[in-house]
Every structure is written in structure tokens, then in C-alpha cells.
Length: 224
Image 1 (cartoon, helix red, strand yellow):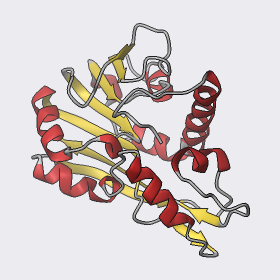
Image 2 (image 1 turned 90 degrees about the vertical axis):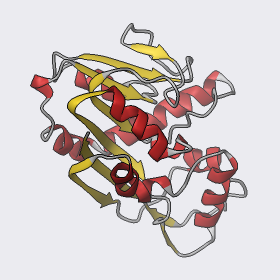
Image 3 (image 1 turned 120 degrees about the vertical axis):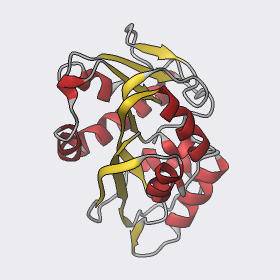
């Protein structure tokens, strides 16, 4: 999960842990990402902008699939790759013109999604697209057996300023902002042991024995 409301603090060790988590998420969602990419007119684009690009994994992949100029922006300069295509900035307030906006685990850090998307709409070219590759729906976390860990996670996320309902409301946000939906859906992981490092970054009092958990991922493509 990527937090974009303020610079991440901590040691390089924590940065490395974040990079490992982002890499794991990226690899786990390879099939979904390929499905989404197959529905985008990548060869017809001139410009792509990714708010909250994190370690730049999606941007690195896109540059091999399109001749479009890609720019990724993130508020944390320490996590960004040292390449010209990645710039430091608050993507909640600083938007770039583009034919395609892409995001991955970004909307949980947007305080007023409809207002923000209306700004995005003004920056998109005519018939421009916004592709959300992945967003957690924190309202649908599966847990077996029930240990109360789900509630601990939600409380911890909210205490960090993370909007836990945004993933479940994407369709509504885009509709209110004047977008039309082109494609979308959701995938749910099977019940499995969660990553303890991931949990400890976002919740307190994690039980010694972790339950099996499942996560719902929402995706979609909207036209301006």
C-alpha cells in the first residue's frame, strides 16, 4: 500500500521493506495488469501520467509497451527511481496534461476523490482515459479464523490518514466527476497467510499466530 499524503519517514531498512512489498504486489497482479493493458490504446498515446508512482514499477513496464512519454510523480523522493521520467511532487495538487492517467494503490490517499478527478478531467486530452490498475477494497477483507485482525488493520490505516472506503467507491467517484466507464471489475485473492511486515507497518498488536486472509482488488478504465 502506498501512502502519498506525506513523506515516508524511517530508516533505509524500512525503505527496502517497502520496495519489497511493492515488488511482491506488482508480481502478484501480473495477470490482472496484462488484462488491463490489453484494453488500452497504448500505441495511440502521446503522453501518460502516473500519480503516486512509488518505486516506478508500472512506469518501467509501460515504457517498453508504448512510445508515449511517461511521467511518474510521487511525494517521497527517497522511494523514486533516479530517472528523468520520475519526478517528486504532490500528485494530489500538481497534475500534468496527458492522454492517459494510470494509478495503482493511489486512491486511498486522495482526500476528496470527486473534486480531484474533476481536476484530472481538465488535464486529460479529449477522449482521454484513466486506468486504475489496482485499489484495495478495505471493506471486504476476509479472515479465517476471525481474530479481530481485520479491525486492527482498518483502525491502523485510518490513524495513518488512509481512506479505507475509497476503493469500494471508485465507480461512484468517477461517475460524479463526469467520466464514463469503459471496463472494470474486481479480483479476490484466496485465503492465505498475510505478510507480517506489511501488517506491522499499518497496525498495532498483531497476533503471534496470523489468520488466513483474503483481499479484494478493484480495477477499472474510465473515459473523460
